[in-house]
Image (cartoon, rainbow, N blue to C red; front, side, top):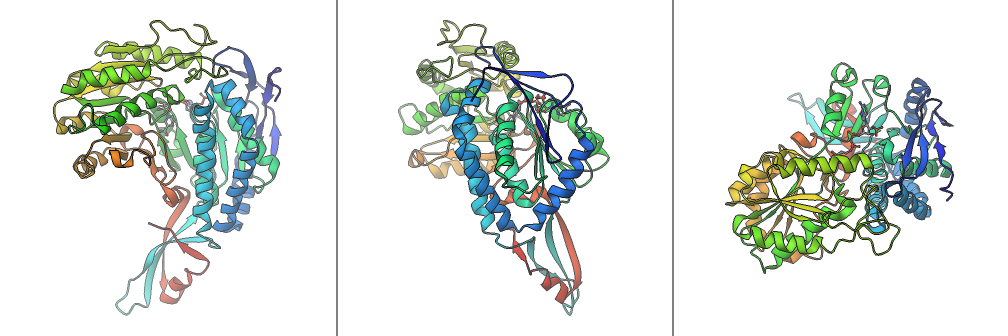
Amino acid sequence: MDMSTPALLENYVAGQWVAGNGERTALTDPVTGDTLAYVSSAGLDLDAAFTFARETGGAALRALSYGERAQRLSQIVATLQANRDEYYAIATANSGTVAADSAVDIDGAIYTLSTYAKLGASLGDAHTLLDGAAVPLAKDASFAVRHIFRPTPGVALFINAFNFPSWGLWEKAAGALLAGVPVIVKPATATAWLTQRMVADVIGAGVLPSGSLSVICGSAAGLLDRIGPFDVVSFTGSADTAATLRAHPAFAERSARLNVEADSLNSAILLPDATPGTAAFDQFVREVAREMTVKSGQKCTAIRRAMVPIEHFDAAAATIAERLAKTVVGNPRNESVKMGSLVSLAQKRAVLEGIAALQTEAQTLYDGNRDAAFVDADANSACVAPVLLGLRDGAAGKRVHDTEVFGPVATLVGYRDLDEAVTLAKRGQGSLVVSLYGNDALAMRAPALALADAHGRVHAVDPSVAKTQTGHGNVMPQSLHGGPGRAGGGEELGGLRALRFYHVRSAVQGPAALVEALTQDAAELPK
Ligand code: NAP
């Protein structure tokens, strides 16, 4: 791939590649500062883009059965696999990630698409999904009702965050395309290249009907103005941007559906029985250090608060710090480097400010930046080494529970008893994930239930699942992704549950024979 001459990345709308014709924004290498490409969405005919997707793409997708659309997902998988090396090169250059971290984004997307291809195949020739059995509405059962799902006759607009240019597109598109809803994706500008390139490959492979997939790189201006009552918008990003979106007439007046995945103060809780020297303690320490450093902590699900019984605070601090000290930070092109850079200098500034804000109430237990010697990267790069902060009396903190620092940063938080740990976790006001580490699986039942009402996912680990557990921060397509409250209130993935967002549910009432006939060409949406 030629990275020497920065090109203007084109947008794909209304079945055509179109260059923006206004102000351009540069995409840069966060390690070297080099300009890699430009984007612009200025001057696009957005009315035509949305109409074409809705009418041409939507109609063609809905003419296919769920099983046929699942086959298209398999073809997308094959296309992405064929171009994997190029995606890794783009991720290295534009996101500053080491290969293992690029894999979370790239191979995570491919795995998610494959999972949906398999799940979708189970729906076979169906064009309608059923929601439960028919229910009689008359004493003699002559008149009845059946609930059905039909794909919404609009577009799915994705406004995505910078940290997952690949997975962020495909984890959403898997559900939308399987549902029969055309996709328009607007990637975050800083890392739009990978998204744009993947869309270009899939378009080039001709595996989707025209109008099913569009990409708009650059400013989001005007997109929400085109959103109509049957369109759906899935947003991933900061709580501040989400608040702006929620107030838009597309939702406030036209009642389009909005799914929000926002920031989150996720916790990991070391249970009282997991004393130092036990296997569960080691699992906790390993996971906290791993979560802080994978993708340089730029994961919405990353552990931000690591909670421990106060009496184990010092032991946990020492062992986590010991692990963090082994993290070699720098240019991801150097094979000795284990953790690359943040995605941009703007993010580096935000992370350093966030650390300073937390330091007003938390002590610094480990700061890899103190004698930072980044490998093949200098102080002008977007590299930041891991920082572990600490708050022995977790209940005394405020910022620690409400400030998300989107980088290799976590706070060790002390708690007195399990009730207090649950209370502290909930001070995140609703999070994507909480994980529990204990030596007794059944002892985790009570805290798991107590935490579930404030977390989209509860991840419990004991020594028996040391090798099989999927990781605190890994989002598995089989499990729900999203969280209540501050996490945005959204729901994605969770197997075929994901399809609901892209469907309209309707109660069809009528003569029993009609209600029975609805089952033709239909499949039950598994609960
Ligand atoms: P952001 O600044 O809110 O941007 C997110 C997206 O919104 C970008 O595509 C951005 O475009 C766009 N945008 C910005 N202002 C907009 C507006 N007024 N109208 C419409 N779109 C607008 O968030 P970010 O900094 O990229 O992402 C980091 C945050 O995302 C973190 O807080 C993280 O926790 C969260 N996140 C959550 C999840 C999850 O699944 N829950 C996953 C990943 C990240 P531009 O890039 O062009 O500004």
